Amino acid sequence: MGAAGDVAHRGRWHRRLDAVCADPGALRLVLHPVVDVAAGRVAGYEVLSRFASDVPTEQWFRAARALGRDADLDRVVLDGALRLLPDLPPGTFLTVNASPTSLADQRVMDVLTSHDLTGVVLELTEHADCDPAQLTDPLRRLRARGALVALDDVGTGHSGLLRMAVVRPEILKVDLQLVRDLHRDLVKRSLVQFLGECAGRLDAWIIAEGVETVDELDVLRGMGVPLVQGFLLARPQEEFVQLGADARRLLQVPLATDAADAFGGPEGHHRSRAAAGRTRRARDLTRRTKTDRSVGDAVRSASEQSAPVVVVDADDVPRVLVLPGARPGAVPRVEPVDVTVAPETAVTDVAARAVARSAGVRFDPLVCTDAAGRYVGVVGVEDLVLELAVTSGGATAPQEAGGWRMGA
Image (tube, rainbow, N blue to C red; front, top):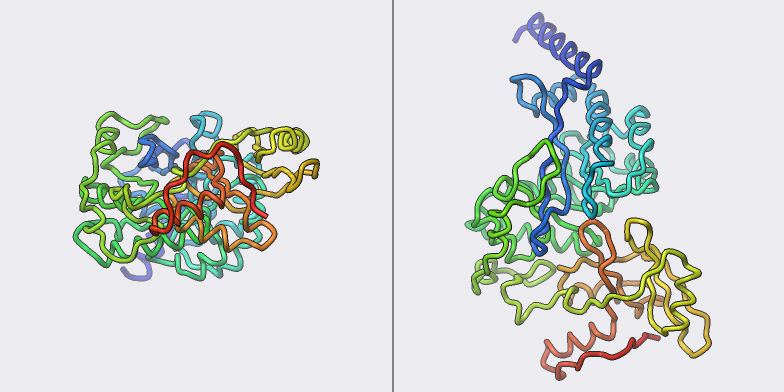
């Protein structure tokens, strides 16, 4: 394309972008379900853009980036996406996408911070590079509004280890190129396991996207990947839809007993659930405790019942853990919930996370939450130790516990 042709081409794209910015109605939004594999239900929805044009969606965003107008397009999409929040089904999350560079635009931040972002996952797209340190302040402000942060296409593009370390995402999305045909590729499976272990250390969830075949789904299930997304289970729709009957049946099919052998490699955070006799997970040791909405009520309950009480917010998200005093009559101890575990987390990883905490809280129960961040229960450190002793052959299985045993 010559200079004149390039100018004309850029001019056409400027006019297209101007039209969408002037009339957001020209933009259509669809919702792609994210599926909780273990529960067999929709855990969340990702908002995707569709334009009234024969030009592919990706080309619109590519042109906007080339023209330095990615923030313009992100602002329009985000504004439309966040208007869907009142209709979001209870217990699910809404994922919206934005380029990391767009967060430097005040208009984009104004759109985001004008909403209560509880239940919103901000997914940082992988199409533009930027200094990860520049994301620290915008992400702090968005998290203060209730948002969670996801890194898109982890394993490719710009989602490297440095960005992961700086951003500290709550969700990692495994790139579809790693998911494609992973049942035939030991290296891909090993990389997915590595990313799962990174997620475990970051106290993050992992989502495998682009799942299109039963073989891919079965391997991911066998590896214990908790959340998946792809055309096999659900296609994007214009409304919030529940998981279809065919998809639920796929998730109910028992895994082959050799699923772990198909994976190979070292055992870790996403070891096979097929080997249920060998692999125990946080959900197996989780106990539901009393919950309260205020710290004062929780302190009274902990004193009266001599058991932990969790303070949850209006969305059932745990915020504070109240522990009974070490001696009768002692004042209960109040600790913020800084570390949580997923029900799918292997017991060995739960134990590793427990002992990695500071000395003052190392023996406190760990709080377990689901994919939407809601309270599930707590896992006692004593139960972890007994479970590890049993699995190592050093002790007999404990009887059902009658009361709470508190650490020092």
